[in-house]
Structure formats: structure tokens, C-alpha cells
Length: 405
Image (cartoon, rainbow, N blue to C red; front, side, top):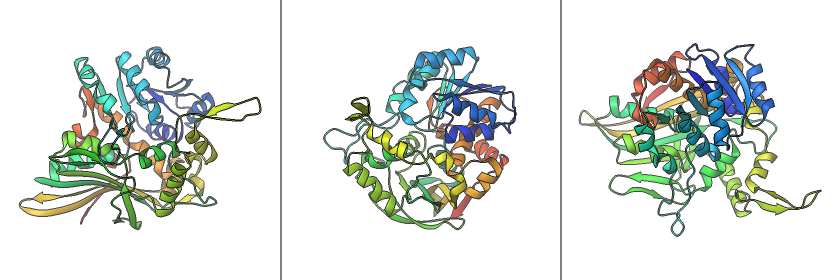
């Protein structure tokens, strides 16, 4: 297997550190718009000759396809933000390669009823091309991070091994992470966080299908394991709600994120001021007017999440809560994966949130390389058997857990 990794930021850098410990691939080309960032990611790997650095513009489909061909890469792993999903998705298909991402094509709210009806849903643009990928015998494995990704694997595992009928699947994400020295320092991409938190959240119900609600709706307190404890969680737009019902039979699917009240109020203020917008606005500059995206300005004003690991402490938990029936009796479980920031920094030099995201596409790549997973079309993690993934995740030294509720 020869891999083109596009994006050498926090998650991309963690991917290289995790992959460097595994023998399943022949080469990994690390490409980024910033060549210094790609070079730094490769330089950190102690001379592993399987890794090389390149510069590429992720929005330039032809350039990406040429890079795939020049290095004879058969897989494109997308570690950029969701704005670049579609050009990279198309470039992989044009080159006849396999495609993996950790976040899907962007949504657009319904023009008249944004908090009742879906407009363009997450992943719609990718699923619209599913028949073409399948006809050509190519695989696009979408949403293969931690959430979406591992959370979807948990949903498939619950359906296959733990339940006869599933009433509800709810992804629940929470943490007790803190960053010393900052009043506000998100542990993941603020661009992506604004996108998913301020868009109308999507809920799935059998017989009704997908519909939307108000941002931060239906608050609940969820008790997270391994010392994290109770965290208030709210509805957030996320890919699992769009992926799980395609392959797993459940009467209701939700995603709730433990943001905390201060974080929610900060996001609401950004929205109130229009600083969540992506359309450029014109501002004065030293050489005349300059067009800038307000959201890009917010991101530029905040610290890079990849650099926060040394100041961060605590744990992060990603998991899937499932309620249903087994052998005629009600059952309720929480399948989860916890990463301690001190451990991930000591072991890999990566902060917990980006490391937890990064390990899952590497596990998936290894399953594809060995043939344990295979397929054609545009497929989510739920389309593949869960047990091989969970066993290999444990073999990587990152075990998962299950709690009977």
C-alpha cells in the first residue's frame, strides 16, 4: 500500500507518528499547502525512509491527481478540513485510487425551515456519486476518524453482537480537558467546530427520517467513564446521524457533544457578531482593502490545537450509547474510547484529541491493506465488520471499553 496523506496539521502529524510504528504500508507521502509543515512531520520520524514530504494545494484536483500518479499512491487519506473534501474525493477517483476521510462534504441549511427540515445534508455530495464509485470498483471510506468513525464502528458492533433490536443510538462525546494559560483554547479545529456546532443539528427517527432542530437543543447530563464524570451535552450536527441509519437498523439516532456552557456562549457570540461567516468581508489593509473570511480570522487568532498538548491535561472520551432489547430483555450500554492527554503526549508527542482522531484511519488503512476490510462505492464505517477493527485498535495499544448502563 502506498498512501498520499493530504494535510500535515495536528491530525496529519499524529497519523504519521502512529503509522510509523506499523509495517503494513510501503510508502506514505505527506503533503501540505505549507511545505515546512509537511517537512516537519516527516523530520519527526527519525529518518523512516517510507515517508516523504511534498507541497500540494488541496483545492487543485489536477495537482493532487498528478501527485498520486507520480508517487504511485493507491490510497488518498484526507486530513484537511471539510472545505477540501470534494476536490480530494474527486481527485482520488480520477486517479483510480481508494479514498478515506474523517469528515464529510459540507451541509447547507434549508432556505426556509432550517430548524425543521434538512437542506443539503453532510455527505450528500459524496453519496450522490456512490454509484459511479461502485461501478468503477473503487472505494471511498468516508467518516473514518473517531467521531465519525470509531463511534460508527461501535454502532455496528452493538447491532451485530449486543442487541436483537435497537431503540436508540446516541453518540456522546465529553472531556475534562483543560489548557493552562488560555481562557479560550479549543482542542480541535475551531473552523470545523464552528461549522458543526452552529449549523442546525440533525436527528434521525424511523418513519420520519432526518430532520433538524435548533443548535444546542435537548441538553442532557451524561456521566462519562474513567473519572471524567457528568458533562452537559447538547445536539450538534455530525456525520454519524447521517451514516448510522444507512447500515444499522435503529429507531432513533442522535449526536450530542459535551461543550460546556462557556464554550456554547462563546460560539453564540461569534454567531451574533457574524464572525462564524465564511464569505469574505472587505477590511482596510496597509496596502488597501483586503477580503478576508471572518471565520478564518477567528482561527488565526486562536492557538493551533496541535501545539497545546504541553499545556493540556485531562481526558477525552468518544463513545456510542445504545438502548434496545437482547433476548427479550431491555439493555442499555455505552461503548467508549478514552485517551489521557499525558499518555498521548508521552507516548506519541500528540495531544489527546488529535491523537484519538488520528489512530482510527490508520487502523482502517491496515485493515484495507490486509484485506480484512474491502468494498466498492461510498461506504461508511458501519458497512464493514466491527470486530476486526476493535481487535486491531486494541493491538495498537489503545483499548476500548463497554459499560452496562
